[in-house]
Amino acid sequence: MNDAGVDMPDALSDMAVLWQAPSLLGSAPRAVADFEEIERCAREEGFARGHADGFAQGEPEVRRLVARLQGLLDAFTRPLAELDREMEEALARLAVAIAGGLTRATYIADPTLLAALVHEALACIGEGERQVDVRVHPDDLTTLRPLLSDPTRLTGDVTLARGDVRVHAENIRIDARLNTRLQSVLETLQANPA
Image 1 (spheres, rainbow, N blue to C red):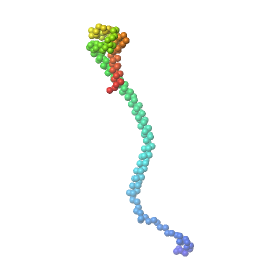
Image 2: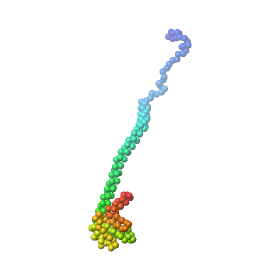
Image 3: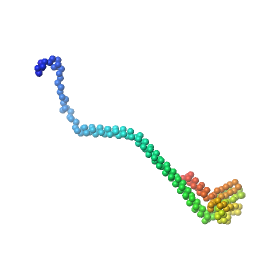
Image 4: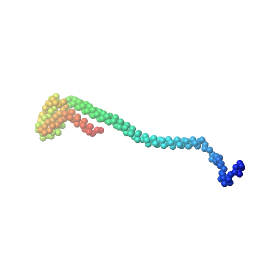
């Protein structure tokens, strides 16, 4: 019999073990600061993972948007580049027209310059040519006659402007019209931009 007066077999009484609560005195309870540090580290790690995941997911979309913006910028700059080119050409034509007007006025004011042009054109033909016809505007005809030698045949041509010269020989044609010369200068400038 046991202390309570209950009959227990001896084998059972030998098997019973007394349970004891674990001792909390051996380990100190965690301080609130420790829990706050754990929470901060967990937040930082979660933020870093979220940032990396968000960046990885958003990167293709950002690339697509950048490509689209680049396409829009190209669409805007192409017409501007074309406009720049057209403006350059228009300014060059204007400069040539102004230069032509000034040169024409200079030829009218000083016929010796026009005579020098005729001599230069005749020099291009060479001395072997006998039949040479120099065509100029009728108003330039009277001022040039005294400045040129006798073998040169001067002809008035109403299709030419003042300051224009055309030289015709047996097999040679020289176009020394002012517009032709200025167009040649313009083409040279456009072919060799500064």
